[in-house]
Length: 250
Image 1 (cartoon, rainbow, N blue to C red):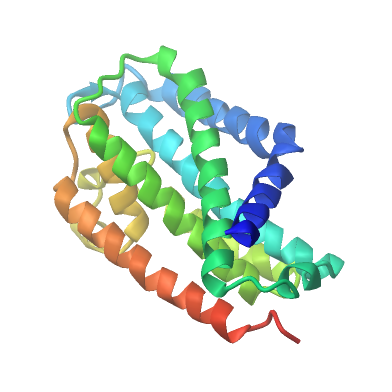
Image 2 (image 1 turned 90 degrees about the horizontal axis):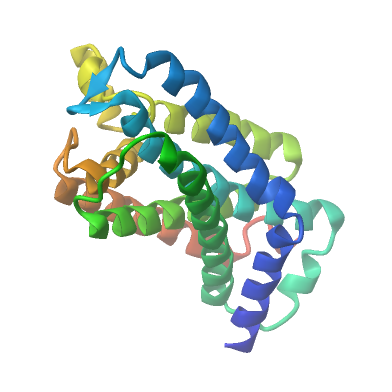
């Protein structure tokens, strides 16, 4: 376990040493979203029987968890490739399971730390209840694990920063923003409601929000099953890429 522990420590230390950029900046970005959208629509819009400000906060927390978990794993690998120090990770006798676990766990730590920070600075803007805290924990952990794994896949696949930026801009950001962070999908036309159900990010956001208010667009058990199956699917892809050395062993 020494190799796993060392790589995990290295990955956590990597983002923590520049916490102003990796933790504080995302928290401030979410704060701006809350001030712009929340202040503009609060009092005019009510969703699931709660104020729009209260509805928005869990979505912003989860969005921060997802985006930062992805950013941690993906940026670490692409930086290692570009600077050439990936060889120092590939040479030690680390198994693909150790590499997968270290990168994903470190990504989860960053995502959850940022999410907690967003919650701390935004929670006092609205009254939040904790109807089902176990679902908050379940979807927070699963969501962070999924995006950490997706970040690992993107980092392995990308060979330069432009490719990674394309993956994030054309896959992660649209999937996140169209997952119901800022709205309930029941407010959408029927065809877009159907489309939204094919977005796994929607189930993460919806299930996470259920933990606060006990209200959701989809039953949380169904959301948990969809999220878990998706996690198993992409984890198998990431582990296969690590085992085969795809774009890692040149």
